[in-house]
Image (cartoon, rainbow, N blue to C red; front, side, top):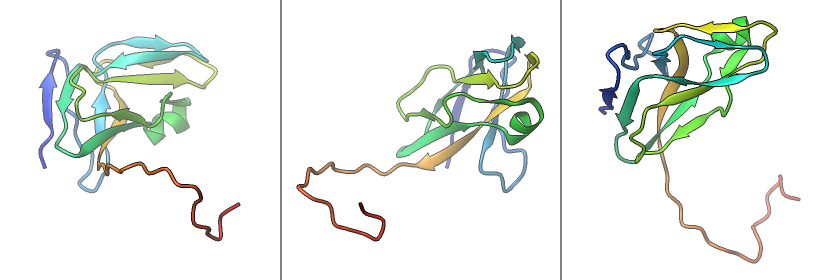
Length: 134
């Protein structure tokens, strides 16, 4: 399966897997930003993508940033729909007590490509019961 990626800035780094069995592709910053404690910022990646048919991309936090610096993705997971062609931005939030410096080329999040299932919505009078029902 191919993921088409457009580099919108010369400094943009293509998403890539760090290891062969990773689920997520690393996303990289194209700008230097300071995120003060308790604040969030939209960090640009300098790329746009065209997803394969019947897929979505989920933008998720990097566990190392969360553990070491209390930096995470605010709207986790962020969903990128198949028709979106704009620049991918990652909303990072600083839950720590000190400012965090995002550097150009820094891994800021991971992107997981997943299949989607479309459903037909049906209104019913009552749902079938299960052991977890009310």
